[in-house]
Each structure stands twice: as structure tokens, then as C-alpha cells.
Image (cartoon, rainbow, N blue to C red; front, side):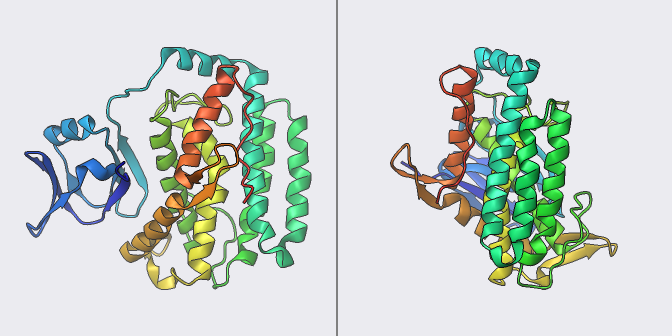
Length: 330
């Protein structure tokens, strides 16, 4: 079986199809052939031209295009026509959204997974974080008293604020986070979190599309136009497990330092090209890393754990098996 990979392009240029090959043509005229049968998703960070002939060809192979601007902020997605959509699953997803109790149960479970993985990261630095862990535990105990999504989200916001402030105890360099700032990020730690979360949402979205789930019907986050809110729901579980561990590893092993960031107008902080490349290398290593799955009794990649989470959700919607979130045991 061919190992499918994500492919990242940082240069400006044009993607072209010629016969049965896809080329990336740089502005210099240099042509780089891309191994189409081995690519799952193309991530485009440069100014890149595409045409409809190319899109038709990519669709045959089920290849996604993810577009980012120069600063690494997500812009949009090209998704080949859905092959796995199921009207029945969409009806069941909607039913669980419309029933306040069923919705609250799923939202609660997503946050249980999130807190487990936050605590897992904090535990690795417990000489500095024991009090913080106790504070998060106390707030998370209140989840079960929540009677609506809004109060649940309020508690989640409290926990995330405490958790991100604890990064100051977990990083070994002079990266300081005063508070989480998304739009725009103003310091290196916020820039890393924003970039990593952006990649996380896209990986989860591409895994959702490989199942019958509809990515716009969600439970913790309110569904709305122009947003794939189910990927935000599932990301709650995986951001601390994947994104944050990549960030802490990169900083503490000094694979990313101050020189890998630039500032726009002295305010917006973002990873420069070398910084993005280093992050993505560590990111891909993490997604390909495997653990011995206790139920399947075989090695499973971090990426495939996301797909499994989607299928666990489907089983719950079909009343086959009550959903419990992934809680890393390794």
C-alpha cells in the first residue's frame, strides 16, 4: 500500500497538469514533478496559480488543496466532490444537535478529552504546575453541572486561559505568553499556537471528509455559515495532544528560536519561511508517529487516531456504541 503524504509548497508559481503528471512551475521556470499517487493533501503557502483542468485531475485522485496566505494563516480549502456523504448520517447528526441533552453529552465528552490531554502536558512539568493542575481539575469537575452549551464553554474558556498561561513554566527559552491572542498573534508563542491550530483544523477536516460525517454540524461549537465547526469540536481533543506537544518540543530542543519569527508593522508576529518549514517537519513526524492501540491491538498513527475518533462519533450517532473521547494512555 502506498504511503500517502501531505505536500507543502512555499514558493510562488503555478500548478500544472501535463499528461498524467502534475508539475509545480516556479517563477524561475524550474519545473518540479509531484508524485500525484502519493499525495493526500497539497498545502499552498505561496502565490500559486491553478486552473480547472488541474482541479479536475486532482479530484480524480481525491486530493485536497489547502490555501494559506504569506503569514501562514488559513484562507480556504478545495475539496473534491464528496464520495462518502450519507443522508442518513446527516439526519442523525442533526437529530443529536437539535436534542439539547444529546448535544450537551457530546460537547461534555469533547472537553473531557481536551482536559485530559492538557493535564498530560502539565504533568510533564509538575515541579512547576501542580497547583495549576489542581485548579484545572476543580473547574473541570463543574462541567457535569452545566445545563447548557454556553456555561460549558465558559468553563472551558477559564481552563484554557489558565493552561496557556502555564506555558511560561513549560518552555525553556525566553518565550513569554501573557494571554492567548489569536487575531492577530503578537508574540512567538501565540504565533506558534495559531499556526499549529490552523494545521490541526485542516488535518481534522480532511479526515472528516474521508468518513460519512458532515463537517458543518457540530455540538460544542455553534454551527454557522462558512465554517467547518465539527473540526473545531474534534480539535479540542487533539490540540493539546498534538499541536502543543509539537510546540513544546520545538522550543525546548531549540529547533525553533527567535530568529524564526518576523513581525509585520511591529505588531503581527508570524513564523518566517524557515520557521514554517521546521514546524511542518516536526508536525509531519508527530502525525506519522505510532502507538500500540489497545482495542485494535496494532500500531496506529496519530493521524489515524483522528479518523478513528470520527468513526467512534458515527457509532454513537447510530446507537452502536456510546461515545467516549480519546484519552492518551501512553
